[in-house]
Amino acid sequence: MKKTQQILMALFVGGIVIAAIIALLGELNVITDCFKKFENANFYTAVCLELITIVVIPFALKLFNFKKIKNLLVTQQDRALIKWGTFRILLLIVPMIANTLCYYLFDNVAYGYLAIILLLCLCFVYPSMSRCEDECSEPEQTELPEQ
Image (cartoon, rainbow, N blue to C red; front, side, top):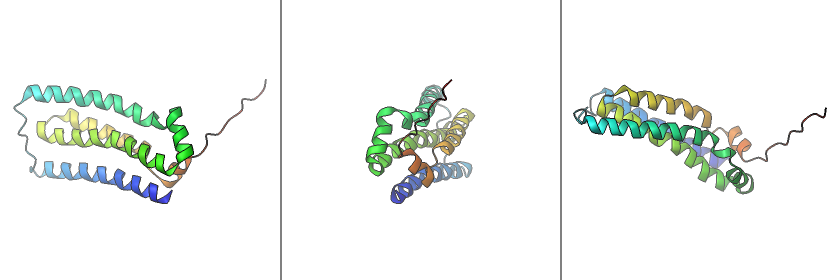
């Protein structure tokens, strides 16, 4: 389980570092606003990334609550956690990196806000050791009190 947690943590931190490098390059004007003149591309890209962000966030946060995935996590543990944990982290990191890059390419703050929202959502899937163990454990059955 420790190796699985380290792999997921490397992916988690790596995605944030890539976005930070893009932001640093953008602030140093290495990434220019060369696409600023393509207003149609800016509009269509913004619409696509907004829709992707709106769909991806709830899906990524609820992914491990689906019965089929939860059963795989309980039965296969490490193997399933690497597969589905990677998928869940990438669901949030890839649009965050795309939004960060588009923020500097199109000089549009909407992309920056979307990237920040996705960065905040990453806090809810932080791959700590206790979270990894909890997600691979059997769900507890709580009994309702009799009346």
